[in-house]
Image (cartoon, helix red, strand yellow):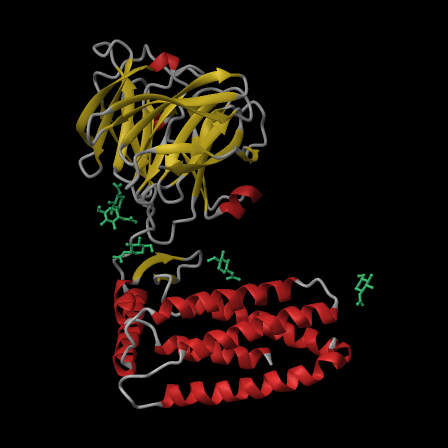
Length: 451
Ligand SMILES: *[C@@H]1O[C@H](CO)[C@@H](O)[C@H](O)[C@H]1NC(C)=O
Ligand SMILES: *[C@@H]1O[C@H](CO)[C@@H](O)[C@H](O)[C@H]1NC(C)=O
Ligand SMILES: *[C@@H]1O[C@H](CO)[C@@H](O)[C@H](O)[C@H]1NC(C)=O
Ligand SMILES: *[C@@H]1O[C@H](CO)[C@@H](O)[C@H](O)[C@H]1NC(C)=O
Ligand SMILES: *[C@@H]1O[C@H](CO)[C@@H](O)[C@H](O)[C@H]1NC(C)=O
């Protein structure tokens, strides 16, 4: 009985999809863990509710089994059921006729369909009572019917469509999907920066102690690539030590490997390339980190080649509040790669510099109003620099922002919980809109909510 119901709901819905909505539906591509191309198709709400129907089909399968088991209890409803089933089969016939109709304009009797849906609604609730079971399946089916009623109401307001045109549009969409699967110009999913800034942070999600399982490895960080190469979207990078020096980086192909501490690659910095200060960033499959006081280093993970540039004005007098030697803080966001530092000229206030990734040089810079030594850390999101500071042992706050697009500065308070007092690393990742914190040796993350 329920599978018949599904059939009914599917068929007319297909016939009423307004063409404009197929065209405005959009398709994005990303890549799955094993390198396969995933296509995400977003369709506007009022189009054919394929996901709900699929969900309903699963429910209906389960329902059929349950209904069979409970059949014995149905004695009192037998008569009613017979009537309903007869109506159902008539409705099926009508819908089938509509579907196979070659008429350009299809007239649909929405009022009748609404009445029938209402009757199914009543039937389901009666069945539910008679079976005397509290079943999530029933609840779910009930909701689906209500939703379908809503969709029917919405669809009614559209101009009745021409089936042939819909078929052509459908074929176009399928073609789009195929093209998308073959598209080599892969772009990872980025959030959009249409909002006005960060609104709040979630509670800290404490993942686990670092991969060295060492409580003394407090100076370090963990990160994801802010502009991953195809196939490396799930990669995590970790590097830490008990001192603020950087000796090696561990690369994990995905989250599970990070948790299991089984890296696919370990980069041990050649002696001349040992780093300092832990505020590294991973972008475009390269790791950017500080060497000595004011040298920006880059390890190209693909080639294992090193390169460096000097930021002569970056001062070795100003570190963040919690750890020493943090002179260059790298960050990647939707808009690019950045480095933050303080100089004597800026009198210890943080300077934000946009880096040209190809040339590996400073492209532009802004001076903020934040004394670096008073800040816990800083990060970039959507081209906006955010600075944090301590409120108390368990609370931190984002208290300042500078929008590099407009030059606008803001002072405010977005408090967030800390797992432990001190942290040596804080960076945002645009691919998942999370903040990554290395909190006294623990991997901690926060979901970022934008306005
Ligand atoms: C793509 O889908 C999103 C979410 O539904 C929507 O906000 C956006 O306007 C769509 N874009 C186009 C080009 O239709
Ligand atoms: C329904 O089940 C409850 C317990 O689950 C029972 O107390 C009640 O008598 C049942 N009602 C009928 C009509 O079978
Ligand atoms: C029915 O629609 C409501 C509101 O649009 C939605 O919250 C709910 O998840 C839908 N139910 C199902 C089972 O799809
Ligand atoms: C963001 O804004 C741009 C330009 O205003 C617009 O084209 C785009 O669709 C918006 N994106 C989303 C997801 O709202
Ligand atoms: C890393 O090296 C590869 C191979 O030479 C090159 O294509 C890529 O652009 C380099 N990446 C960066 C960020 O320099």
